[in-house]
Image 1 (cartoon, rainbow, N blue to C red):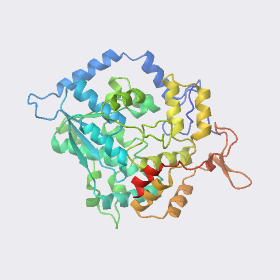
Image 2 (image 1 turned 180 degrees about the vertical axis):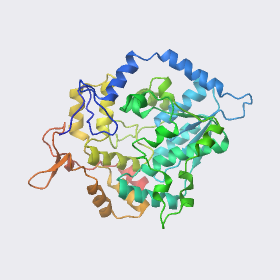
Image 3 (image 1 turned 60 degrees about the vertical axis):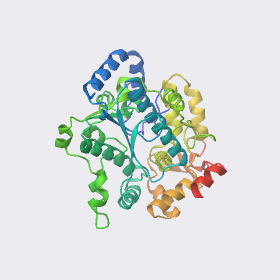
Image 4 (image 1 turned 30 degrees about the vertical axis):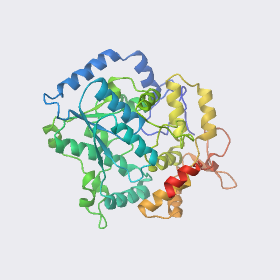
Amino acid sequence: MIKYCKKCVMPCTRPKIGFNEHGVCSACVSAAQKQEAIDWKQREAQLRKILDSHRKKDPTQYECIIPVSGGKDSTYQVHMIKNIYQMNPLCITNRTLARTPRGEENLQSLRNMGVDHIDFTVNPVGFNKATRKAFEKNGDSSLVEHLATYAVVTRLAVQLRIGLVVWGENPYMEYGGPEKDRKADQLNKKLAQQLPVLMGKTAHDWVNKHTSIQELESLLMPTDQELRAIKHTPIFLGHYIPWDAKRNVEIAKTYGYKARESGPIMGLYDYADLDCMNIVIHHYFKWLKFGFNRVTDNASNEIRKGRMTRAEAIALVRKRDGIKPPKEYIEHFCRQIGITVKRFWDTAEKFRNKDIWKKTEDGEWYIEGWIGGDKIPDRFPYIELSTEEKRKLIG
């Protein structure tokens, strides 16, 4: 039986989540601490001190790296570092092989803020081999993508000798996790390796007789010695200034950032998960593995920000949390890694968590004790794409 947070709608199945003696999840505990126990003026003063220590006398030199996807948060990061704190950043993107047209538009609006930008593409042959293996062995369409993002940025920081890297939010602080990790101010190598999205994997996990390490070179992490040599300082911006997705998107829109006109693909936000088609599949597999999806994430965040009641969130979870990704997204992913759609769904079924999913006498799957009630959640439909979106995706 799944246990849910007493304040939000997050289940106990979320990786790294914890509950206190009152039945409140660690993400809600963290949200309360951010409102009541953190001196944000002091935190910002610490941020300014860190930034000042990395300023260069030569204005033509890069003073930091900002990892960017073109999403609302990375646009906000560039706004804060470049325009508010007057640093000279180099922006770096791990270019997804499943970038959407809207993702490209938003990345261009970020560039138009007046920054230099590296749009880095890893070896697609090796990347797709590794992604197929990670999908079939670990049930995640984006595991290799997440590793590539971290590795590419960190490798380029070493090669360009830029010590300061400005990441966005600390995922444990925003979404729950052990207290020591919620308090972390840096995405150091040790913390990155234990992130649930990386599952402790490295490039070497996908090397075999069909895939050489040379094909996965961009996924290799620098050594600790190399990182010390550049005084690697990979800070979480969200540790020093309050983090709010809705505030971030409003600022991003002033620079030309565009949401999805026909509404969200997954979850509640039409301005999130826009840049990569495969991230939507990643979120759907959370539904099979853990019994929650993007609506639970977003609704819980809205509760913590005081913009939604728990009753309203439960109603939204009942209505939308089990919706499957668009068929076009699944077909694109299958073409990318070279599998059939049938193999995709066979793999999906392999990762259904039998500890939480049960079957009716008619053979239909349901989640015992699901917050959505008696409805059989896994029969929910696909999201429908607009005609224009389909045209852009499939030609």
